[in-house]
Length: 293
Image (cartoon, rainbow, N blue to C red; front, side, top):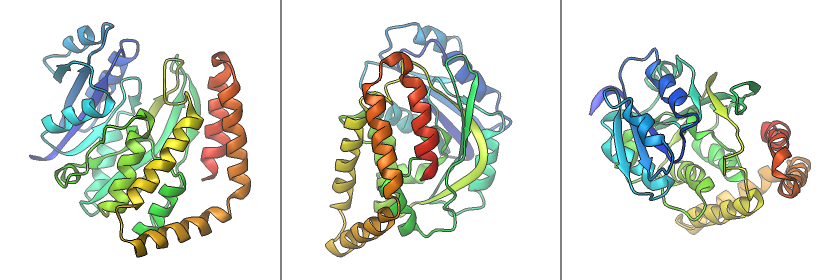
């Protein structure tokens, strides 16, 4: 394992439209010690042709379609770096993103997941708004986990993850709902593996919203699925620790009743809207609700 190497893993499935821009943003990083692993998960478009254009600069895994988690895990099994960076093939890294994350990671205990603020862009790459994550750096692990259980969402495309966590057995699980894969990973990392989370208060990613995304479709059903994930993970703890989490979560949530009602209303609106205007409502949801965590 290269002590300074960052392995950037890009799971690819029918991503031809934005793939080149995404890869170029990694190749343009100011941090020099990077390997790029792109997993073509049975794409039926020209994604593999685009990847092959970079065959002298990136590692390409071409496999039959096995789903998002298996694509990411294929990359993890191939990686040689000390850290892993997940990047969706429609998102763009700021040029100094990896350098900034690594510099921060070296100041912190090894069992830490670093994440950052980010910028939302639309299909044409136009900036829609900035997102500033809640800074919980001063909280202990338990209190941060309570916020994760309450719904604290970390944009997985901003994170830097130590490879030692995968070696401990904390991998991306195959789930019935792809939207839950990263949230499930963060919950298990924090609650079952004692990982500390640390925010870098800089925008380091351009996160693209476009009509072909599935992450905001059937969102009400997905949220119910997340509730089941929380219960499953907590059930792996002893009864006393479970009770402590449920009690603390109840106390924390009690002060957020107005926000929760607003969130429920916003999600119901999104679910009923035609696809042509759902993007605007998603921005409303992320802006008004997610920002109040």
